[in-house]
Image (cartoon, rainbow, N blue to C red; front, side, top):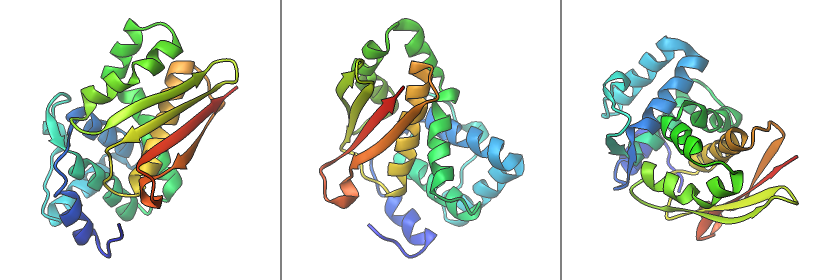
Length: 201
């Protein structure tokens, strides 16, 4: 789906019915503060207000349900107003697990990486009221995992964000920095789901 202006993007994204936890909004805000400073966060709030979607990050609760379209719009608008490239969006996704209280609690309760992998769909359901994360394969011997995201389609830029998120998640769980992620299937290329392969050493 291609849009010409941020106004067009905002109009389309905010029609999306799905909801996400406020935690995801707070993860976005934390990354922007670290990368662009508090002034950057204010600039983002002002731009969202100009687009007809005013938001105050400091008033968002981690457990409240918010619009996923608006969450995606934050990523798209940030790329535009801060002149980011896709690597910056990838890093935004990669940083998110470090800020996640829900993930920290999940990791405390589960010991092995393979168990966390198998239960990753539960983590998804705690954050999204739509879509599904499918843990396809975890090969400890050959050091790779395959994950699919189904029922999620907002904006192509979110594929980059999710690739970064999955890498950050793997780094958090596997305690390794030598991790690569490859998007092998994509809903914007005619596939019915997104598929990512994570490899580590």
